[in-house]
Amino acid sequence: MGIKTALPAAELGLYSLVLSGALAYAGRGLLEASQGNSRPKASPSCPLPLLNLPGLPQDVADFEWVMWFTSFRNIIVFALSGHVLFAKLCTMVAPQFRSWMYAVYGALAVLGTMGPWYLLLLLGHCVSLYVASLLGQPWLCFGLGLASLASFKLDPLISWQSGFVTGTFDLQEVLFHGGSGFTVLRCTSFALESCAHPDRRYSLADLLKYNFYLPFFFFGPIMTFDRFHAQMSQVEPVRREGELWRIRTQAGLSVVAIMAVDIFFHFFYILTIPSDLKFANRLPDSALAGLAYSNLVYDWVKAAVLFGVVNTVARLDHLDPPQPPKLRGSGDTLYVYDHIGGEHSEVIPELGATVATFAITTLWLGPCDIVYLWSFLNCFGLNFELWVQKLAEWGPLAQIEASLSEQMSRRVRALFGAMNFWAIIMYNLVSLNSLEFTELVARRLLLTGFPRNTLAVLFVTYCGVQLVKERERTLAMEEGQQDKEKLE
Image (tube, rainbow, N blue to C red):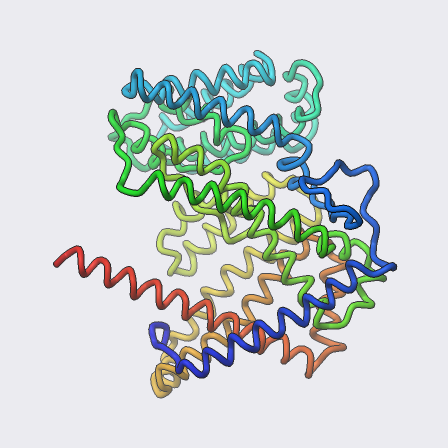
């Protein structure tokens, strides 16, 4: 109730004013902290940034960002560009065999990069999960998938399997874990899909074509097997009207986002400051809240950029890849979450789906105390959201909401949404930064800052939630109008 209801324009204008003012105020505090003489220093051993602005050293605390867009930028661009050229040639010469050609090209790239023994190791995992899929037992496929993933994360098996890589080079460890982990996840997706549709009789060749598609091989994302197989099986794929323009737009936005983040890190040390707790503790509450918020937003932006680069290449191959995840670490295991949880509206299936999802995610990230805590908190958070939703549908509470106007119902829901958003921030700060920094933020905002600063942060977040919901409502209305016009 109240979700599709519009709020008065003056009220939305007030929310926009409050949110923009609060962000500017918090940003000013972060800028002063980042550019002050007592700011935390970046490591001098870090490589040069993408953009080198004189007199403004860059925050280079994020290994993934440095790896993708500085250290190994040219290697990644070369590999993806080679695939694009090869894919274009295949589409022109023999489009009916393009899935085979992509797989052969990807396997040859893995062979040339990691060596023949590593390729045989991955083929062994593919065959084992393919054999398990023939038995038609989802629990067996899921259990074997977990065991295979654990073998790449836990000693002594990880030490033994890493010996299959020949040679030594800078990207070796990253490519080993990326290629191995994503291979297991893709094979698990294939096995579960085979169990769900035994009448379709997928072959081992279908699995190999799915696994060795190069743009997704080392860095993901995971495109579920059913979607990949259906789209890649089109003999003569046809682009929708305006598709090339949208691909160019996505590529341009990815480049702009990369440049914007790179420039941002010259002015705001949002990744380095949390590592210095004494310095972070001297920040005012507004700047500390902005620091916590910006770390979560940056993680989402990074996921969108990394997905955007790879997805642009996939869309050139006439694929419709998945969108960036909204939860750190979950984007590559969402097929398990959706496969078990269904519509995510029932308590028991949702509990099973979240436990299975975060069991895989824990192995994917590498078992340790921080990952255990992060997985538990996010698993609890997803289930708690559903419990609250079910409680709101309970008779007495449902009657209370029914007695409210639709606009007031939307305001009440937005208030709970604001509290839930900060719960998400706190859950993910554990892995994004550290447990100590999370404790510092919680203590400052919930204890020493209560009630004034606590309520101020909550109100600003409430304003943001209302503006996001208004944007979603507007987009839903526009899509509904477009569908109506097509029917007419």
